[in-house]
Length: 306
Ligand code: ATP
Ligand code: ZN
Image (cartoon, rainbow, N blue to C red):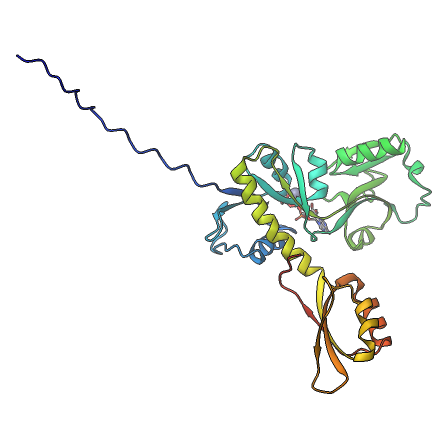
């Protein structure tokens, strides 16, 4: 027999290399509560579509590589720190209290509230010294401990998980440290606000160990969030003015660069278009009128990219 000279064929052909899995960003938001609707609205205004069927535990966006996990807000910092979710939306109060390893990425402008100390209305509260030796009920022991330490006050912290505001009324505590937004709950329970411990709003948090692909998706999402939030903080303003007032009015309108100026059909008059900050708006309007502006229109802006 002649020996075979040809190399034997390989038994199996090399399988094609698998394409790398396409990256997916996982965001944790509150399942139901004060932040849930606004968190979903934020994603929607960023152009991300979520099917609104029966509320599941998780949902994939149809037009962005994003998966949404619906969780209790208290669990979000832990899930994000452990990388189960890559990013999350949570109150800054919860982020600080849970003290997990997460990065604060962006304030979101909703869910505004404060964590305050409150005492019975009839108490002549004289300052943080009044708390010395007292018992304070709270669901925020970590933040409260920190605050008392900074103030050099020793007080007993009674940790309770809900209905903190009834504690003084039933003799469980001398004071409470709880979330306040309008103060009406305190009032109903015969309490008054004594100190603001922290102010808070919803924030976007991220896991400290995002890989490059996820970081790129986060940047893309963040670009959209900023465009939406900047737009909400500004208004588009249009007005008519005599040409002689254009210079003065241009100086009042800070705008993005400088106002657009279009001639009106009426000789000697122009229309000016610009952008004003929502919180400077009323003051600017008075000055514009004084400078000779007429027919002022103010419109919302949907997206704004600086
Ligand atoms: P969960 O069931 O998810 O644990 P929760 O009862 O702890 O919900 P919510 O009352 O829905 O939480 O509040 C969520 C967050 O909304 C708070 O942590 C806070 O950041 C913010 N917030 C804004 N205004 C208020 C308010 N008036 N009272 C309480 N929280 C507020
Ligand atoms: Zn909660």
